[in-house]
Length: 254
Image 1: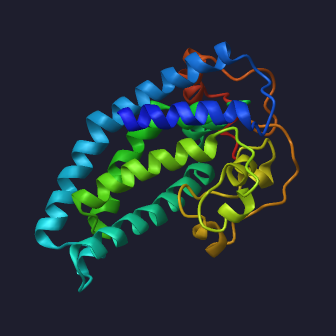
Image 2: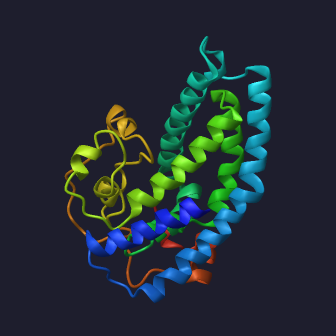
């Protein structure tokens, strides 16, 4: 917790020192929504994903089940393989949340933020997190992810997501994007342009976008948000209800 708070504090400071974009909305309008959605999403992770996926991971390690556990290598190598394989799976799940209409309805809540900073990393619908729980359990079983690898990946994933959503303009951003998802790389993914949104899905290692042809570093520099979005981002209650509205414009795939 202490390390997490220190990291958030450093990101907050760095965003004000080296901002990539000038905010369009008042922080007091955005923060309650992002933090509220984040609290609900993290509750789902804490009460459902971590314990359920953790039980599967324990069985995986005990029985040497799944891809990583099949490797004739020391435990630390199998753990490293599990982390990389989970990152690979997360890339494909992210792609699915953009291309499957039901999943996009929920994921669009994340993209509806009209500014982007580290708090955007928290802005996920709780139902979006709940749907991903059984997916994560299947991934852990098939990929052979041990409890240690699951914990390492969880910490690494949340640190990465907070970092690449940060409103940061780094002089070494393009170089960093050759290995990891950088703030500039993910900025493209959040632009209100359909072609931009359908690019740069990686959440940790950037190799997946390059491998599967979804990497982009040259898209129109348009504002953050969803293409066709009008007005301010939805408030907390509206954000929770909008995916279930039959006339919700977010149901249109980007």
